[in-house]
Image (cartoon, rainbow, N blue to C red):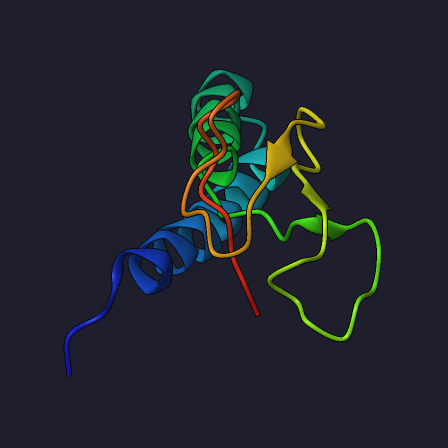
Length: 90
């Protein structure tokens, strides 16, 4: 079974968190910083769940916001037009 991009990113993040923890315990601070920076970059690419501003019975008419930059989103918009983050619709 092949992994999608989100599953691959989550796998890499989990592995880097393990490595980062090991480096911190072994006092390899320079390497821990590299791993920490890589983790931050990967986590910044994770899709965000939009904020639902009103709760109409029809979710297509609801108003949504990006939780990162507070820009308006339309239902099922794949990326925020302002900050570029992927949007994860439940």
